[in-house]
Length: 492
Image (cartoon, rainbow, N blue to C red; front, side):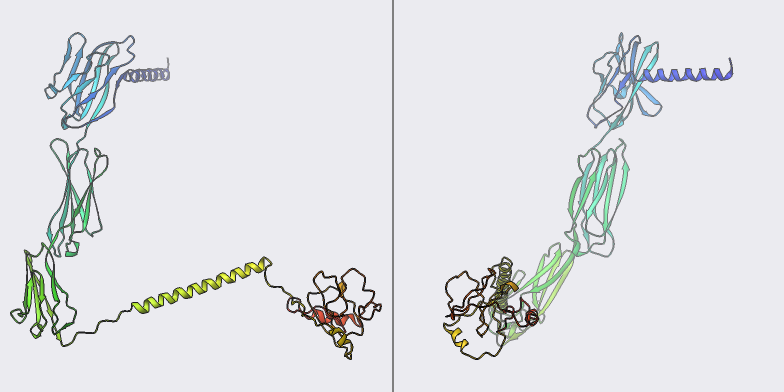
């Protein structure tokens, strides 16, 4: 047999051994990872499945805190029963069923030091030892806290807030939420029991304006469903800043309602507020009521400088006010409410008028678009009775007279008497009775036949033929149909 064949055989044999070992190891069923809390309990499950012809002789549980350092904590033998050889687990570990097929154990009164790997190992025949490993992860809820640290206003950076997540496992993370300019740092301290304490401090340069501002600490850790929030308010201490309110420059002789108020902004709050005159004693006409100065009656003695002073544990602050007494009260300021209201009313009226005009304009355009507007042609003027007869008696001057009620086509030319100077009126109605103008020739109704006789002379009228049709067309074309109330010219 060649060397190549020997190598192949060895490889195949190794593969079979590895495969069988993988199959055997899979027969010991355990949970790969479990979690628990200190002072709690945990069940570590283990069972041998599909033993078949394999004989189970004994099962052991081993604890491995550090890799390679194993200690037996529980042993079960079908003949000799259970045994717990490790003193660290004495009285805290027990078998839940006490059988080779299911040798699960329970550990009570858990400690943080119990975290590690637990190996369930079977002694079998003829395959040998088979095992499965479960990792126990010990979790610890951190003890969270946050405080705002009182500081004094100054120009140096100091710690203004502190947040802590103590004795947690795994390690917690801390963050800050605030609109205040500053920075923060973190420190982690491992504890003896395997937990970790995390501390975070927020630093800034404190000013009086930052007092009372909000800052929030957020603690996030695996054992918490959501981050723990700790809203805080900064505490910045500073000496009083004093202002005097109530002086209106209208202290006239005899006034009785003058009041001055001393306002002090400080942290902590002022413990003492005093009033005095810069010249010495207060005038006899004034009275002090806590932080107020009441002037019973304005006279010449109050024409002085008043001083208010406030003190707290960090210092004091004061403010001066010069009061000037006048003979007569100042005129009351005129109100601008009248002109403003009048302007508003005028603007409303103008807007209403504009709106009404726009509405009428749109309504008119809509009416014209729907054909409801005024007629585009001028109706014929009323004619007096007998006017035709009078015009027949007048000499003709060959003048072209144009009359229109509606534009006429070439085939609607009126027939009329050639010796008549009376303009022919185009009637739009359906009146078929006798002429209403006292003998005026009848307008041709478009039937294709001219009237046979004249109503006045009872003579047959020949068709009218213009002397020069081009002249008539030229006159008509020079006048736009939409711009004139006159129809085509007719020669008289």
